[in-house]
Figure 1: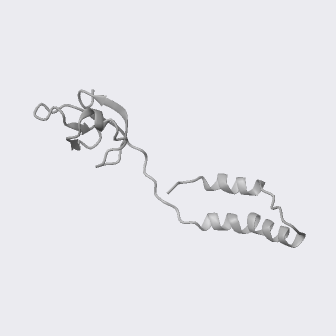
Figure 2: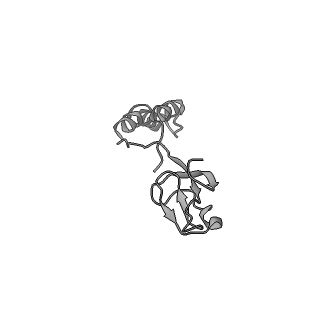
Figure 3: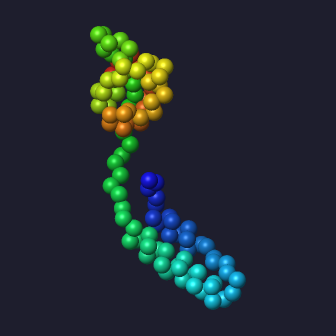
Length: 107
């Protein structure tokens, strides 16, 4: 899935000129581009997108020192530090892990 800006898409479509082998096809193509495509875009279903959550991996458990914890939801992983850094998103809450790895949460 890829959310798009519908207004920008309609503006882009309006700039196109339909090239066709004869005038009949040209009129039909321009009708589709200028009349039907904007209506199709307006009638397309929308989604409720959630804002991106940003987090980081932290090590703060004295009983499980190799346990990385998500700074957003507290999910704990037993994956090692080298491997956990390859997790770009938390498998539990979906937070984007671009906050780095730290020695404690909420530093």
